[in-house]
Every structure is written in structure tokens, then in C-alpha cells.
Length: 219
Image (tube, rainbow, N blue to C red; front, side, top):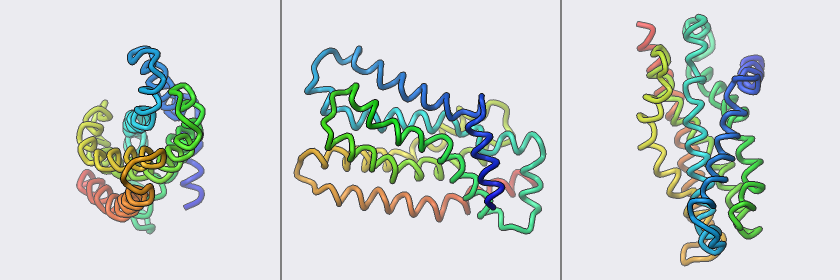
């Protein structure tokens, strides 16, 4: 299991693996927004958490096709399907490796990019925390779409379209928790706990659904 995890992390961090592309896309979205909004620092500060969350969501969806497609092309997915290890566990490990290589750099870079949106220090910390808690849910939910489109050429766009509606609750509560940290009528802990519950729920359900999709593709 550790060998599989380290293998997928190395492939994700390797040139062309998608981790750097997602980080550059994340930066591009954050950079473009101030030009579109204008020099209103108060407005940028208010919408900063939403911008960071939307950028993280889109950057995560960009790398979904690399979750299972390469393994399907070289036959590794067939070996995983026929192996002694439960396929659900294999899917969970691959999702964790994908999150480590693709989403963890976004979480680390979020406070730095938030400075470009004139976000206060408290909002920077809260947004980074919500991204750390919520982005695993995006990866695990995305694994369902990635499994369904693993054998399709250029199936990344289709996978993103399939899972985008399922990611909306994570986006809503992630932004709500980030906004609650800087004031508002809702306590910070309330949306944060719901966000954590969504992540835990996806970590349980998504590997089962993705494994079922992979088995269906092999029949």
C-alpha cells in the first residue's frame, strides 16, 4: 500500500503529472480576478475566500483524468482489479496520493495567494484550514467520475462535468466557513463541522462507488 502511494505521488509530481499545472492554474485564476474586479480592496477581501475555493475546485477537476486513465492504458488497473487487496482500498490509496500531489500544494500556497486578494490574516488561516479539510472531499468525489471515464480518451472534461454538481455542497460550506471566521451571524465551527462531515462521508462512499465503476469497466 505504501509503495502504491509513493508511486502515485511520484507520478503526480513528475513533469507533466499535473501537480504543477494545477498550481499554475490556481495562481492564474487568483491573479486574473483583481484585474476583473478592479482596485476595490474591500471587495477583494470579502470575495477572497470564494475565489480561492473556486480556483482550488477547478484546479482539482483539471487533474481527474490522471487518477485512473494512465493505469487503464498500461494495464495496471487490470492488475489492481484482480489483486488480493480490496479494490476499494486501492482506490482510497490512489485518491490520497492524488490529493497529496495535487491539492496539498494548493493548500500550502493558499495563504500566499490570498495576500494578492487583500485578505486579512485571520481569513488567510481560516481559508487554508477549510481547504485542508474540504479538498479531500473534492478528490474522492472526483474519483467516481474518473473511474467512470477511465477508458475514454480525453475523458477528463466529461469526468469534471459529472462530478461538478456533487462538489457544490463542499464549495458552499467551505466558503461559508471561511467567511464565518471573519465575522457574520454563523459561528465558524458550524460550517466547518459540516465540511468535515462531507469529507468523511465522501472518503467512505466514494471508494466503494469508484471501485464498482472500475469493475463494471472490466466486464
